[in-house]
Length: 186
Figure 1 (cartoon, rainbow, N blue to C red):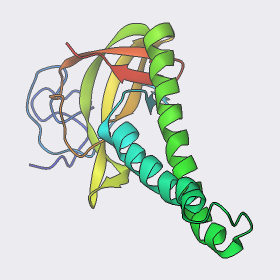
Figure 2: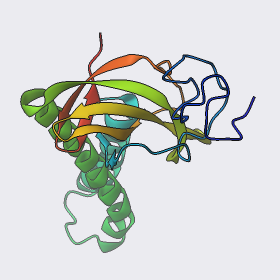
Figure 3: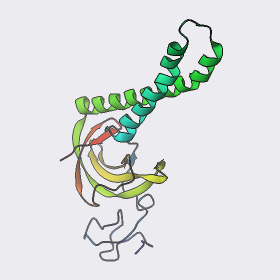
Figure 4: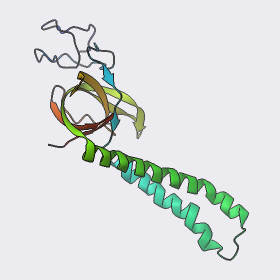
């Protein structure tokens, strides 16, 4: 069943997720991005470590770094002015540097949140497709209602994958620092 109206057919409450937060009625598939936005939305960046933020860039950082930075010095160490070889290897070096920058930025966010972040609670309100694809499938953003100092607000937490690991209406523990968030595993 797909949601056609923005009210629960069971209790008449405004619909904010696939499951009514008031009566627990399973409403069906919902586009969580267009449902009633009762609360303000915070810009959210995921600060957790994952395959896509550490290991995947590491593969490029090491492989392309070897080809772009090490290989030119190994092949012709006596000919420092070998312009064509360095020109060919230059794009590989740039890709390696970008991959290492992604890894360092991810580690910076993770350390910042683990050291300075405060633990907060949130409730899962649904999922929507993100803009990043993983193997030709859209990555998921988890819509979570969090308690902040200014009151309740929504975040769209990037899952960094295509799965939907948290059930709708379940409670989550998160660590937050500014707009960096990380789900704390129970």
